[in-house]
Amino acid sequence: MDASLKLAAYINLHRPVIGKVVNFNSGDHVFNIDLTKNNTELTPGLLADMQVFNNWVKKKLLETGCRYAVGGYMEQRAIYESRALFDAETEPRSLHMGIDIWSKAGTPVYAPLNGTVHSYRDNNNYGDYGPTIILQHELGDFTLYSLYGHLSIKSLQGLSVGQTVSINQKIGELGNVDENGHWPPHLHFQMMLDMEGRQGDYPGVCKVSEKEQYLKNIPDPSLLLPFKTATYRS
Image 1 (cartoon, one colour):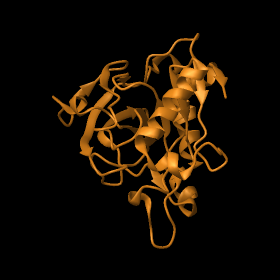
Image 2 (cartoon, rainbow, N blue to C red):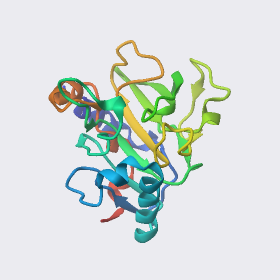
Image 3 (cartoon, helix red, strand yellow):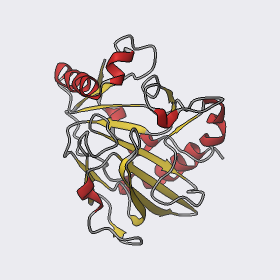
């Protein structure tokens, strides 16, 4: 079964026990952000200069009156072309496998499900996740893992593997550009059915040729997010 179908089936039966990932209410507007080559505002110069890119995201939030900009699941992005981390000899990695929630540094992040701390790490390469937390959730007949990337350094303090996490418990906050892998402040939220032996990290961007392979393991994160009920602005 496709990973998203498996998770959707569980959620349909257990919707009341799904919590939040960020604070959100029905009056919030959400900017649907486009980071593909179709967005002509994303010039090479903008993407290569982190301060310019950061100012662009902040301007979009200000112009639209939104607390959050959201998007990215299985989106082929232009923004990785200036990051050596995503280069490959035969085919670059450009397909984004999580959902990004762009907001201010310090924005609280919560666990949407009961679970435990699977692993955590500061993936501090340029363009990487920065501080990252991965939770493990036992959902009926399957296990789900949720990944939270680009957090603040202090989000990792006091954590231990196996630590219990409760639904709607604050687990961290968005990091600033100097600590979060050098990105405008945002959360990379991703889910996996199998960690494949990894600890504190799991690919968030893959090659386009690998899409079908990853779809079997990575559900659509929007299944656990309320943004689809909001008023989108573009």
